[in-house]
Image: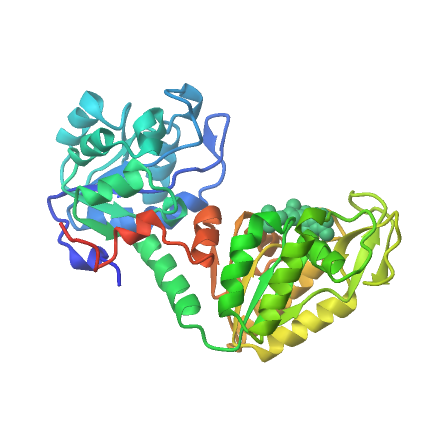
Length: 399
Ligand code: AMP
């Protein structure tokens, strides 16, 4: 249970709202408004209820003050989405921020400069968090995508003011909690992507929860090699073969079904439209590399989806940026989207590449929930406590 905007009267209060304004800016203009649109309902709700909305966000990874990573061009884009004026202050603490906040009236919106212009932000420096807290009466966090970081505007600040989840944070927490904490079984997980090494924690945590683990992408090659298949020139982490064997043994001991590709699309070069052929998993040539799973594997994955109730998906099945090696990802995404739309499964997907792949497949909007929070989504799936979320729990000490 988390504290939300339903638990607080914001009227007349200075409300520090942590958002994620890491939007793409090209030639001083915001080229994709998605992240702003996600937090707009929270901002509008607080403003409509007579709160003074003070927006806080990091932007990029500046080392100190850096005009190229200023939030200044983002403020007018927020104003356009909200259809109300948005003021801007040149700093997120100190006089510029204080003066701008003091000038605010009920319902006003103010955007403060990039929190990462101060080294205290990423260090979660207590003095910096206290300076931020001085600007507000309450804190609302609407940035799930930053919740895995114990930074001052995410964690330290929440310890200094009464803290609540904003609406987009609330949506994300409700969706992820419902589907993952108490899943309707059978539960299947797709783990794809390039490497096993970056997903060891994920595999461990999912094996504890899922009934079926579907492994795809470059990481499946390491598992195939661990089973004794020759994978030619494919991406393969040879040093992790014992780890892959251990994961499979553990899964089998727990009664999990672990599914590896039975066939593959192979090519001699890692490039779009490279000449390719379909081959069984035991027929890969020494000079070939696996770039996608094959048609029999796709069919099997789809048959698994047809017999489960819940699907969690992270990572593509193949090198989906290169046509036609996006085939498996696109076809399986479509199958999952159709089953979801027909009310047969619940589906949650997340992670940067996965969202890009599902969007390219035109499937994302039919999933039950798609999380755009890359790192935070993965850490949540890994079963890790997110510092920015823990401080919003009803059981955490209220102010
Ligand atoms: P990740 O960020 O770990 O989810 O990995 C996504 C990346 O994995 C994408 O860039 C894909 O191109 C890459 N990938 C997926 N399958 C393969 C494969 N069989 N060989 C090489 N790269 C792959």
